[in-house]
Image 1 (cartoon, rainbow, N blue to C red):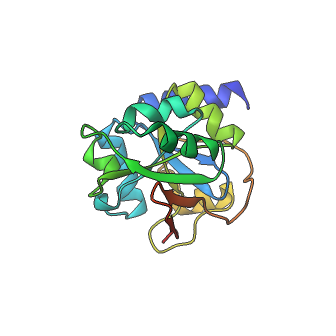
Image 2: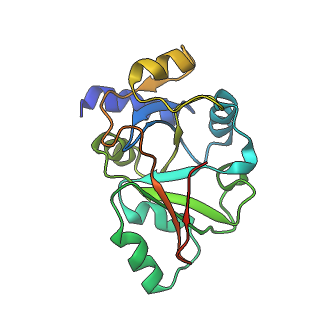
Length: 184
């Protein structure tokens, strides 16, 4: 990963910006999950309702842990055994998780990425980031940087180059109760 571009992306996040980044299956948009203005700007760009909630992505399970209520050891082991990779878990969120991240849900969607560019961004940031597909509501998720640029012409603050690992295949969404939720 180009350190200069990564540094620009980190600085954009620090300034409340939105960064486009390749992930496992689709291009994503990321921002600081604790910056309510950045998250609201991201939701507005996408035309996504706040109540749906967002995914937090990290490069290490320890970056996710502070966002979650305590899980039984065997539950945490099941979750971490699926990471890093394209598996998103819906897990009980701590009460203090901002509503703009959790939405109207008691659970939080979390994933530890296997994508080297997304992981490098989380490492440079030093924690979990919001990650949502790079597309306006009702449009297909972007599968390349050109589509990201077409969708958000001049309205994102940084774009990290790279390619998708599993083009067009969204992450699997699981719960500890054993349910697999199909992405909508």
